[in-house]
Structure formats: structure tokens, C-alpha cells
Length: 603
Image 1 (cartoon, rainbow, N blue to C red):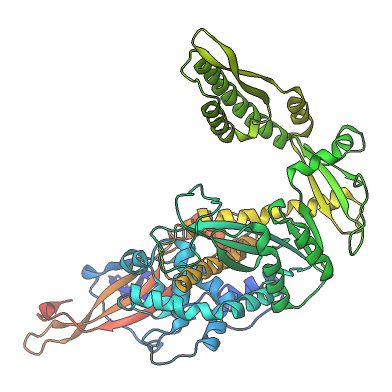
Image 2: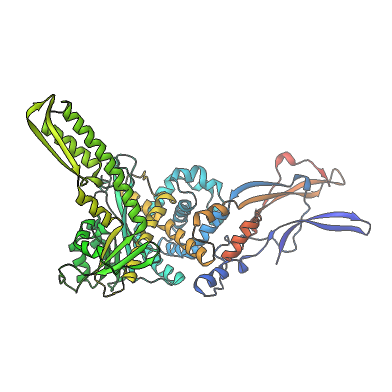
């Protein structure tokens, strides 16, 4: 191996000797860096190609090259964030996205290749999610991505980033197909069980040019804003398989057939098991799945539990984990459906029961306080009309809808005034509501057309739906998918595609960490790696001897060695567990001496 080394000549009793001051980076480290170890760890295939985590090669000096350096003027410049973008760039290449986009977006007359722009957008979304303006003004100039991608900071601006979004969107389907195959290779994924869920993300602005932006049920508690809905499909391991964008007022159940059709169009029809929440359930959707030879495990509306009230009181419950029990039940009147019989699984959770009980009690207390005020207003004569009293009661019930059945309320006019009162408000607790809550709190019902008779196995497949819910939480909390500031429909879809790609990188890193014994918290790892910096070691050199002043020398060229700082003890442990080696040096450059330093020097 060849190194840059800073060597000092010193006089000793035995004559001049050279002392190594510092090593400034290994010359060629690509052949032994982390990709070979990573490949063996992930897919057990030894790959001989250079590391995916090495920067592109730069011209190197001759191996016998040496220079006289002016130690007084040695200094460090241009500190940049390196570790997090280096890791993200390696993940991008590991997934084959660089190769895929280079093939689908061939280089033309553009100043910056569009695959590089797509990489910048996605890596920024993973490392420090923010706007395209933030990428231009703050983030990109602060990172070492220009060394890794070969794209100067001056060439990364909002116009280019926006156009990069437009260029990326037409390749959405090809990207999804490629990632399905690549993730399957790396992690031995299975695609016979698919989890489907839907969320929404809202806009800032009027969005007059976007017909998809509409008001609907907001999962972000922003009913005042226009939104779009996003349906995401993940595997039982939580790996994303595909997504679609819908109008903001689309009902969840209206998206199912479109999503199933999209998956079958991309990957063919197969006897897959679809796992969906109760918001997706409709008889038409279930019939659609059965007709296509598909299976399903779905949640059911809460009201359907009443058909199984007797089963909830009987024995036969099986504990599947601490605090959770399940049992197989039969439909009260077994109805034959096209494609076979359905199976129902009752489940009850102690933690869920306590949460629902607390919610019911909170709403019941608020409702009772409101009823007392309504009764007092009627008794004092401030409320005299039954129509107005019913209107106030309706508003009160709407605000406390979870406890709307807790009280029986009757409003009637008085035949004769009693003092100032003209109407009477009578209310009392509904014992049936209380009994039903005590029985049903924490319970939910699953419905499937699978022939599996083990309720625990069916429940475990359904509970994996939380992986899809976590995917939405990650895209919202960690990758900041919203609020969306883009106004054009295609630009919005491209923004969501970039968030999807960043989530794929996130899940790939999480799976890699789990297999390395590092848990599954990518944000902590990314933030730790962001503390690894790169910088320029600036070495002013001695030039030729000044012909007019013997014994003195002219300033020579300045050597600039772009190096990566040594990781600390904790970072070295993380790198070792991941099977990675940081590159010690990124590149070297020579600069002519500054005009102000043309005077001769003594060395």
C-alpha cells in the first residue's frame, strides 16, 4: 500500500534522520473496503468489485513523489459532513439505483446527470429532510457529496432540483420493480403476504392547479388543509413494495381494487394474502379478492362485534403473548360466500382495554357535565325552545361521540310553566351501554377466508399490519413527507417518490443494523455518522532556490489533501459491526502559490 506521509528531517548525533509527523491517508483502499464484508453479511455472496462506499477514483501522484513542506503554514480547511452522506451514497449504490437510473436516464447535454440529481434529493431526504431551497443554501454546501458525486456545490440549485423531480417521476414503476427484486435478493424476502394501509399528507397553500388536493379525513389533524392520500404496500418484514397517490377525499375502501390491480399488473396474479385494516373492508372488495384467487385477513367494524357477544363471554381463549388472547369463532348464521367459508378470530388486549376504558370515561364525564348545564339552562328559563335544546344536545353528542350512548336523554315541553322553566331535560345513565363497554373494551374481530384454523397464527399475520403503520410514522416524523409545498400534481407525486426512495434506504439500513446486532434505529446511526467529517490538509511546499538570494527558496505549489478524520472509539465500533472501513483520503490537488506569497523563504 502507498501512503501520503508528512516527514520531518531532524539532526541527530548519527547524522540527519527523518521522522514521520503524520500519515495523511492510504493511497488506494478501495479493494479492501467494506463492500465485500457487507455483501457476505447481507446475501452471503462474495463480490470482488470495489467498495460501493469508496469515492470515485482520482488521478494519483507517482509513488516515488516527495515534497519539502513548510510546517509553519500547515493547516486544516474546508470541514464538511462526510459520514452520513457517505453511508447514504453507499446504500443508494448497494440497491443498484445508480446503475438503474443511469440506464434509464442516459446522459445528454445536461450539465449535471439526472441520476446524480435524484441521488442528491434522496440522500438529503434521508439525512436532513427539508426543502429544495434548504438543500441549495445550506445542506449541500455543508456536506462532502460534491467529492462523492463529482457535482460542484455551485451546480446544485432549486431549478435543477425541481427539474430533477420532473425527470425522475416517469420511472416510478421501473424503480418499484427493480427494488422489489433487489431487496428480495439482499434480504430473502417473501411476497406471499402483503400489508396494505393508507394515510394522508397535507399541503401548505391553495393548490389551485392540483385537482388531487382536496379536503378529507386528515390523519395529521389538519382538516383545514387540502391533502392527498397515499396507499403503501409492504411485505411482512416491513419492506416497501409499492405505493399509489389518491385524491385527498378518497375513502380508504375505494383504493383497494386499484392497489391490488397495480400489484398484479407489475408482478403478476398470485395467491397472495392481503392484510388490511377495517377501513379497507367492504363486501365488494372482499368479493373482488376472492374472485381473483386472493386471500385476506382484515379487521372488521366495531359494530360487528355485537354478533359475537355470547362468544366473548365463553371460554376457549388462547394467550398469544402477554396481555393478548384470541379464539376462533363461527359466524352466528354461517353464510356461504363465493370461494368458501369465512373464519372469524376474536382478539382482546389488556392494554387496549385500559386505553379504551380511559377514553370512554373521559368522554362520559364531559358529556355528563354538558347535560347538567343543559338541564340547568332549561330549569332557569334561559333555554325555552325544544328545537334549540335538541340542537345543543346534538352538538354536545357530536363532541363526545365515543360516549353518545352512555345516557338516555329526553327533551319535552311542559304543559304548564314551572317557575321560569318552559321545557324539561331528563337524562339518566344507560346500563346497557355500560355493560357492553365492560365486555367489549379491548376486543376486536378479524375476518379471513384462509383455511388456517390456528387463531394465534392468523392473529400474528394481522398484527404485522403495524409495520405499515410504522412506515407512515417514519415517513412523517423522520423523513418529513409533509407538509407539501409543491403545487403541481406531477411535482407532488415526484416529491412522494423521493420520500419513498428515502424510506427504502431507511429500511435497508435498519435491516442491515439488525443483522449486525445494532438494533433498528437508523436515525441514531445516521446522526452519529454525521459527526465524521472530511477536510483539506493544506501543505505549502518549498519551491526552487531563489537565484538572486542563495540559500533561500521560492514558495512552491500548495498540496491539498482531502482527508477523512479518524473516527472515535464509538464510531469505530459501529463501523466494525457494519463491516465497513472509512476511506482515509478522498483526493489530492495541487495549487499554484498565491501572488502574495511570491517572496523567498528560508528553510
